[in-house]
Image (cartoon, rainbow, N blue to C red):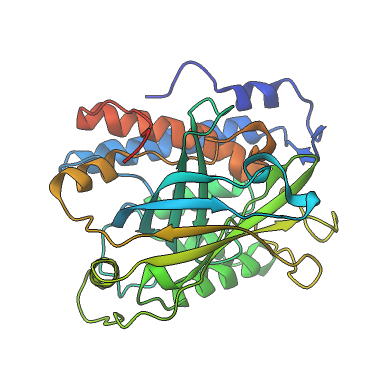
Amino acid sequence: MLNKTLPLVVMSALLLPAGASCNEEEIPANEVAATQQIVRMIEDSVRAEAKKGLARRDAHAKTHGCVQAQFRVLDNLPEKVRVGIFGEARSYPAWIRYSNGSGKVQDDSVGDARGMAIKLMGVERSDSSTQDFLMISHPTFFVRNATDYVEFQKAFSEDSPFKFFFPGFNPFNFRLHEFRIANAIRETKMSNPLYARYWSTTPYRFGNTEMKFSGQSCSTSSPFTETAAPNFLHENMQKHLAQSEACVDFLIQLRKLPTEMPIEDPTIEWSEKDAPFIHVARITIPVQTFNSPEQLAFCENLSFTPWHAIPEHRPLGGINRMRKTVYDTIARVRHEINGDKHLEPTGF
C-alpha cells in the first residue's frame, strides 16, 4: 500500500523538467515513477516476509549490534571544513548500528556488504533532532539510479540478481562495471565490524560544496577475529567491547573535480588522490554490553535515513532521492506491522 502523500523530495522533482539542475542534481523525467515502482515492490516484499514473523528492513536486516558512542568534532579544524555539524568543537551522543547488507538474515560467512549507521542526537536545526550518517564497507554502490534499481529489484524478487547484471544475451546490455563492484563488495573480508573502513558511497551537501564521508578504525587490531560461528561479527564485537573501548575516525572528502566526481552516479569513486579525506571527528565507543532483550528490541525499532539531516548536509543524487521515499515507507510499514511507535532517540 503506497502512501498517498508524496514526500517533498518527490514533489520538488515533479516541479522540475527532465534534465533540470538543482544544486548540480540532474533529475530525470522517469525518476518519480521508478521510485514509486520500487516502493511498491519493496513494500510487498516486506509484508510477505512479515507473515513469517517480524517485519524486517528490506536491506541490512541482520544487526550485529547497536552501541552507544560519543561523536566528538575536533578542535582547530581548517576553516574550509567548519560547516554544519563540524562548525564548532563539541560532542554528540550517538547510537551506531552495525549490520549485514542483505535483506536476508544469513550466516556471516556469506559474502555481503557490511553497514555502519551513525545517529547523532541533540542536533539543532534537524527536523528529527538527529543527524544520520549511513555507510557501507565499500566506496561505491553497484546501482546507478532509480530506473536501474527497478531492474535490480525485479531480479532480486525472482531470487536471481545475476539477471540484473546480465539481462539477456546482448553484451551491449551487460552491466559489467556494476558487476565488478558487486563482486568486490561480496569478496570484502571482515572479522570484526569495529576494525573496518566504511564509506557513504553517495554524496551530500557540505555548505556551498559537496562531500562524501568515511569511517576508519583508529584502534589497534582486536584479538577477537574468529570466524567459525554463524554470528561471528556480533560475537567479536561483543567480546571486544566487554573488555576495551573502540574508536573510529570520521573523515570527509570535499568534491574538487565535478566531471570526475559526479553527483548522480554513485558507482564512480571520487579519487582520494585528487581529493584526500580530511579527519574531522573522533568516535569513541566505550566498554559496554549491548545484548539485553530491551536493547535488541530498541535496536530493531531504530530507523536510519540519510534524510535525518541538517540543511548543510542534505543528501544529493538520485539514489538518495529514492532512499527518502523508500526508507520512509518501509519504516512506516515495519512499525505498523510490528505494533511499534517510532520515536527518534534523545539519549541512551
